[in-house]
Image 1 (tube, helix red, strand yellow):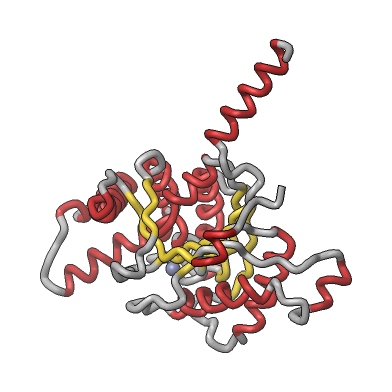
Image 2 (tube, rainbow, N blue to C red):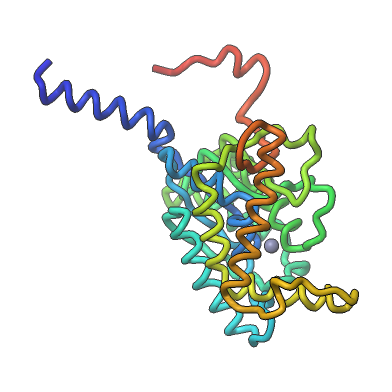
Length: 289
Ligand SMILES: [Zn+2]
């Protein structure tokens, strides 16, 4: 072996160690601009660090999530800020389905599913991140509808009789291989995957802070709710960027620390993880080559 080829082999080995998932794609299906950063930003950034290429699919247009702006301006700002947040995590591309925020009930789930199947067949994701379709205390209708459509699309995209017109334009069947489901609250039995986000928590926090319009809305809502109950949070006496960023930092670390404690980690995110197969199949599967 020449010195040059030995160095190339060493570099390839180092790359395989630090980027074990090179060549894989992950797709995040999020109802709103800020769901993916809040619930899974640390794990997504970590998988990107390890070699994944990431695509974000945002289902709504986020036209209602602001404190005092009209709908068009709200949607525009939330979209621009989502792009900034996605950039901080290292997400390569964003696809927006632009359904009206909190108005998705009349939209057939099969329509959303069809749009997701098209994108899954095009992007060929190994891994899917989305809401847990079985989440117990989910109250947001956009989250519930997005979760069901994404789960349904993940396996239907591999069925030859579903949307066969795709095959005439060069797309093929594709089945998502594993899934990370996030939720507001996962039961201990359902939270079967903890991801160590100690190396990515700072990026996660910066990504959440990038949703300036949404975080400002959340801060005003919190202050108004407390005031109704005759309470005040001194940090929010004056709502400005510094106060909002500090609150995001404290709340994000607090949650990640509490989840980390359960698993002996400094900071963690928890998921309900669905592998490509289990039991006999995975115990006996061997590499093709
Ligand atoms: Zn949301």
